[in-house]
Image 1 (spheres, rainbow, N blue to C red):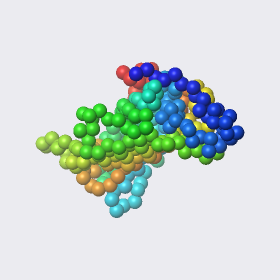
Image 2 (tube, rainbow, N blue to C red):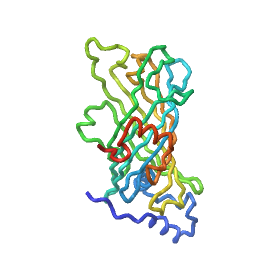
Image 3 (cartoon, rainbow, N blue to C red):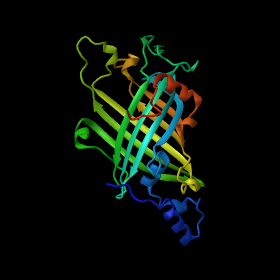
Image 4 (tube, rainbow, N blue to C red):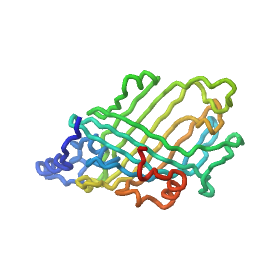
Length: 276
């Protein structure tokens, strides 16, 4: 299906003309298409990738104990967005992220887990996802993927406005089964039969920018999930959480020098051909 031919502000300007309301009025924003807004803020309506740099912290909290920051995290992602004529959305993302010691900011190629005192080897990540949402903003999974999950729920949330500012949110909640560990493997890398994940991301922009080809946007990301296998926490109860903020860029060269240095050193070629 081909992407829709889009008029970026037709709905808003039409409403303002008939009601006399300011374009920044929360009341005037009620007809905003949440799927279209999601595409505008996370990516771009013209089909160009949304380019994001992000920074923040990664937290760990064993059950019954206080949370502590385990890492600083920096990364970069490419987001391809397609808004279809029927209102559905396809979203494809690929990212690279880097674990760093929170006190020094140095890359954490080796790390002593403060929760159990064990030596670990963090895995700097290159990960991807492909999602589809229907015209109502509900996550659509292919049957084979849904059958492999115990639970899967996702949605693009209706926009929230406050004065001149607007937010778009995406929520994903999953519960999956883990295979049994291989015989003789380290028992501390196996987290149990079930894995759960909650992913909460919010994109923020100014309403006045929604008629632009490139909408300047910021992001806040929060997650809840279990231990990574390389943390060697075994089946100890507890959760980990990303706490990230990000900025969308018109081109990759505007990313922070720190992020560009990590990518050029550890992921050469990623910025030129991320989908390879």
